[in-house]
Amino acid sequence: MKYVKKFILRGLLGITIGVFLNQIGYLFMALQGGTIEISSDIIISQFIISSLTGFYCAGSSAIFEVEEWSVLRQTITHFIALLPYFPVAIYAGWIPSTSFGKIIFVANYIVVYLVIWFSFRAYWRKKAKELNEELKRHNRKAGLEN
Image 1 (cartoon, rainbow, N blue to C red):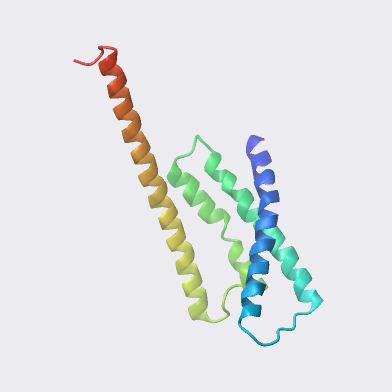
Image 2: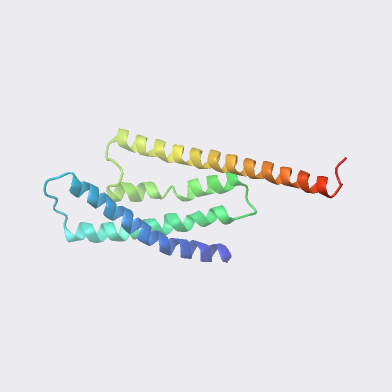
């Protein structure tokens, strides 16, 4: 139940982030120059899609709080949990419609997860090393080490 609560709380923050990122996209389109006409139907659908996507993506980060799971399991589970993002992003027009654009998008998705995995791995290795060194210092002070 605690993970459901974290999912919901993070998801609520994710709504704000999703809509903000969507508006940043509109801002970049506007900065390209020229006139942009966007119908109210598109604005409404983009608002709803970015809200729901933000909720789901941010909420799913609660997967990384499951302490009983290894970082590898958390990362793979999160990777799989976010796969529904692809059809949503295609429907919303956030992924280029060309095959090459879709391949680049998927490649970026995989690279991000590899970066996450190796970053977490390096971080936890460093933490384990620091804790072991601290334990050795503590044992030396207590006269427990030979």
